[in-house]
Every structure is written in structure tokens, then in C-alpha cells.
Image (cartoon, rainbow, N blue to C red):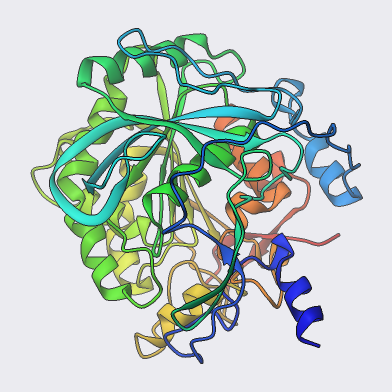
Length: 442
């Protein structure tokens, strides 16, 4: 029995904290990717791997992709080559026969940690300054599946590690190079990426992560999204000082809001990068709290702008109070040409957040009465995209092919209403007469 359980738990599909809401559960955390405290003394292993086996998408995926323009249809066999930085030496150990390399330009107000063979590391400590940099992330050619973030498996019982898989660049996302950049280097390198883009010419996207996310996992997630979308413009990620454990929810919320001036400065750097004409933002979970604080705080660069400097703003599973959001939603619609909210009734992480607040609803939830409907925001109920028992269903925006393709279509065309760009979306009239869209399983 134990051996069968061990084998089952090592499957990547279940690489999440089971009985996962530790705040209300038993505290038994089963297999999950090593997103914090993973060994840093392991260089990428050069191995010979078989060519990936092409798997035909099911009919639902085919339907979604049929509506995508040919220029942005996904080709997971196409490598994303790293771009040179004139002021820095090329990254070491570059072997693109084993992995693709996806570059992510980052900003963070985390404290710098001890150095590693791949370069900089960052802790959960709060630094009173913005650090700019870039991370070259390796994505394994032989094992990467669309929407997955392949990391070494780990089994822990309370605080005791029972099993930890060795990190292997042929099987896992890893860091090839992480380095700090000056402002001039940052603008030069990101500008080079922007000018080289063809499918997403002139576009950049920024990912703002959520709760329980260490620096490495934030970079890996941004890299996964950019790679799976074949987004050839510059990919940016802002990493605020999340502690990266499930027991520090309140502290993380404070840290997200404290990051406001540094996130403000980082967005200004992106907007002043040569070649960046359109900025898309994807804010996930508690990352929406950081964004909300930025948009509503007086005196920030963002608050003082009078233009719609964001092209597409994606609110993915927002961990925000519904009543508060209704009162500040105009700040979101003011800055963006289009705002899309993805919500789900099966999001267990938001269910835990709701339970901590006397069951007051969260924006990313879909109660029986229906999701939040606000003028100027396209609300999409994606409950059908994630209802697995052994999953938090909190990362549907990045893991589900149909939903991520919808985001890619938004980045490429901005087409609205939602059911015009994706035939699996159905318009639904809410209780108050407003319209939202529901992803169907048909």
C-alpha cells in the first residue's frame, strides 16, 4: 500500500500540497515541486534525451486552437534562444539540445541571498530598494508538457523531508543564469528583445505572482507562460517578498502591499524600455492586492498617469474582497484598454482565503449566485477548466491550454467580447442583469 502511494504521489500531476489548505487541514504535505530550499550546487546535467513524443490535442483543445491566428499557434518544438547582453558575458553551459532557454527580466524588492553557481539568489527578506535583473530559465525539451512547471518532486511529513528528487536540467525547470543589471543594461537588453519580436511585435508582458511564491517559482512560472504562448517579446516578472510557505498568509499580504513603490518604479522601467509599445499585465491571486495598492495609492507614477498604459490587464483568481473591489474597480479600468477577470468555483486556495475572512467572498471565486460582474470588465467563469480533486485549481490561467490560449489571443488581438475570440465561451445573464461568460466543457 505504501509503495503504491509513493509511486502515485511522484506523478507530476499531483505535485501540489495535498490536504493543501494547511491553515485548516491536517498539516500533511505530500508531493510538491521543490520551489524553495532546493539544492543550488547542481549544474545542469548533459544527457542525451529522446525527442518529445507528439501528443495530439483532444477535441476541446483543437477547437480552442482553431480560433488562434496562425502566427501565434503553439509550436512547442521551437527553441526560444537567449539574447545577448552587451555588458555581460554569455551564460555558461549553454546546451540547447537538452533544454530551451527562456529569458525573464525581473524586478524585486527582496533581499539578496547567498550566491549560487547560476548567480544571484533572493530571500523572503524585504529590501528597501528595487533590484533589476534577468534570469535565463531552462525548460526541458524531453519532458515539458504544456502548462506544466516541471520541478523535482518532494515528499515531506510536517517538517521532515522523506524524499527529494535531484534537480536535473534534462527533466526540470532550472536557472542557467541569474544576474543583476544596471538600469542601462536592463533597458538595452529588454529593448533588444522587444525590437526582435515578430509574432508579438512591440508587446511586453508582466507577471505579478501571488501568495506562497518564492523568487525561483515566480521566474519559472513567467518563463513557462512565455514559452507555452511562444511569446517572443520581452517577458517581465515582479517578485515581491513572499515568504513562500502556506503558514505566512498575513505576512505575505503585508509584503505585497509594502512592495508598492518598487512595483511602481519597475513598471516605469518597462514603459520606458525602447521598443515596448504595448504592455500586458497578468496579476495572479495576491498579486492583485499589490496591484490594487499601487493603483489606489496617491502620488505614485502609475496613479499620476492619465493614459491607458496597459493594453490587456488579466486578473487571474484575484484574492481581493468583493465589496472592496467594487469600490476600486474604476482604477483598474482607467489604466487598461481591456480588463479580463478569470474566476473559478473550484479554487481551493481562494476557499481557504474566504474561510479566514468569515466567508466574505473573494473576487476570484464563483459562488452559487454567480461571479463578480462590473462594467468595463469581462468576467469569465473558468470553473470547467479546473476541478481536479488533488489540485488547488488555483493556476488554471497558466496550466490550462484553453485558458492560456485565450490569454494569448487577447495579447495578440485584444478581441472582444470573449465569445468572439473563443467559441467555448457562452454569454450568461447574471442575477442583476449583467453579462459574464462561462467556459463550457462541450
